[in-house]
Amino acid sequence: MPCVFVGYSTEHNATWDLVPSHPSQNVMGCKWIFRIKHHPDGSVARYKARLVAKGFHQCPSVDFNETFSPVVKPVTILLILTIAITNGWPLRQLDVNNAFLQGTLTDDVFMVQSLDFTHSTKPHHVCKLRKAIYGLRQAPRAWYTELRTFLLATGFINSKCDASLFIWHRFGHTLYLFIYVDDIIITGSSDSHVRDFITTLAHRFSLKDLGLLSFFLGVEAHRSSHELYLSQQQYIRDLLVKTNMLEAKLVSTPLSLTESLKLNDGSAPTDNTQYRQVLGSL
Image 1 (cartoon, rainbow, N blue to C red):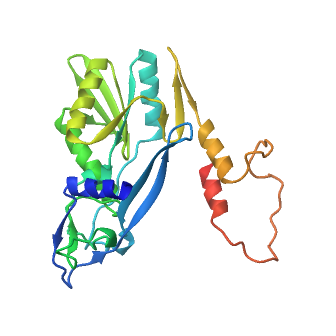
Image 2: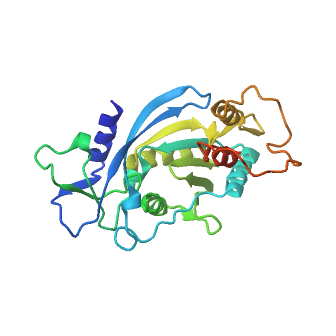
Image 3: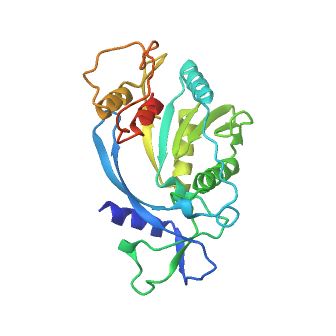
């Protein structure tokens, strides 16, 4: 049923309008992406399907202009976590459902209908996108702009040091909020103000309140009264399972410092991306 659910999400968000096809339109393709979402302990959380646009069909200055979207800096994450732990503030985590579908497009972008969900009476029409469907070059920027506009309207100030950090200060209380795509961490001096703002945010965007911070960007967080312990144990285990190295012996460095690489006289590797993928995961 996941395809039906995502189909409902696009309809519920008024993601596109069906319009007649025209030769002047640059019409992109689309495809379904299937993914398994996991809990922090590695168990299956849910099966997910998402309709995405083939953004590589987009033409600059025709289908999009600006694409840059900021992500929170690691130093900002550590700073806000330190402030929260030092002051005994709550750390709450939110996940926005179908975040990119919340972003409003300012460009005229067209996409074919999915073969599995073609309109019965308008089979030859194309989708004129109103929302930033996943796969578009400008989708991350459109979502960030939508969220930023809302936060500023509710009294937050955008940090000049990190565009993904927002600060709210009123009535002697302070809230800090930072975002990484669709993941949001919020903390503040007043637990009631934190809860009230989460309610306000949920009225504007469909989201999941994940409760106290426990897992963020592949990092597990375990909190005691005066400290926060961060661990990537599950991430490392998943990487070892993926590379069939769960039983490998412990080494101090992933690559020998004295190894002299030689030209391979044999056949080329069948998969020349695996090495780069593993190296990039470290």
